[in-house]
Length: 68
Image (cartoon, rainbow, N blue to C red; front, side, top):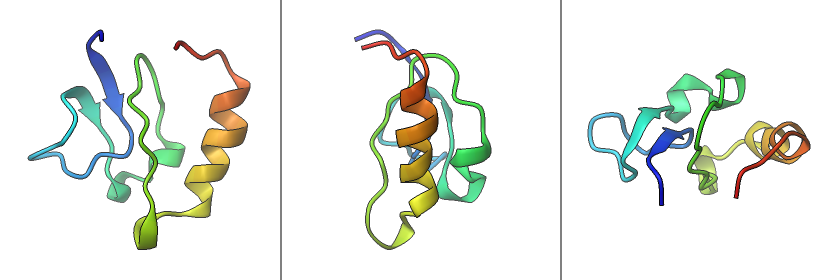
C-alpha cells in the first residue's frame, strides 16, 4: 500500500491509529474539510457518528473519481 495522505475519521491527532500525513477528528467536522490524495476511509459508528458523514461519503465522495 502506498503512503496515506489523509485519515478523515481519525481517533486522535496525538496518537492516531493510521499513519497518515494529515488527520481530521470529529472536532474538525470532516464533512466540510477538503479530502485530497490517498484517503483512508473507515467511517465512524456509534454515538459520535453523524448522518452528515454518511451522506457526504455516499453522495459527494462516491460521485467523483475514486482510486482503488
